[in-house]
Length: 173
Image (cartoon, rainbow, N blue to C red; front, side, top):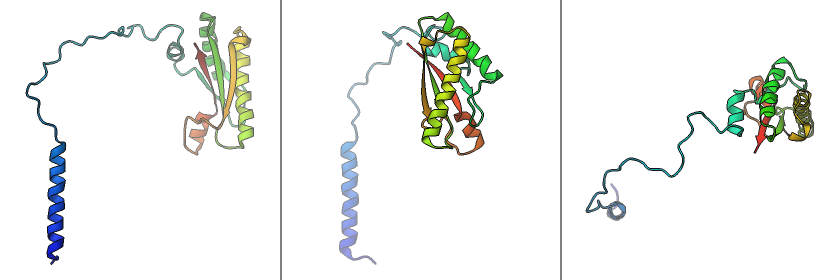
């Protein structure tokens, strides 16, 4: 059995909580608002043809994954799959000669910070050099290395590391 003061205190606490909750409840309005009519917007409707030509969204949509190239462990060489992706990028960049791009070099989590920054830089420069060899003006392309600081896959396994060994091309408006 509980002492009488514990039972009374518990009951009072329960009643106080119920009263506090009921005080917060919203009361129904006297009159309901009208049914919503057709939506009117001041923003233009999205284009049925997709993203605005020459935008970053257009670049990503047209590349269909070819905005990123991947590397083997401790490598910065451009293989045939990378060449095909970079050729697509070069065609897009030549279609929009006023657009600039930044190539971001990345590495997986293994290795020191300094080593991975240098490796990311070599990867970004390899991609840039290939684009230049295809006729893209070098002054339109910047490079940056993030090393292992911006992984796209967070696992510590070969599948994740393979996704993180990459160079990503981002267009600049």
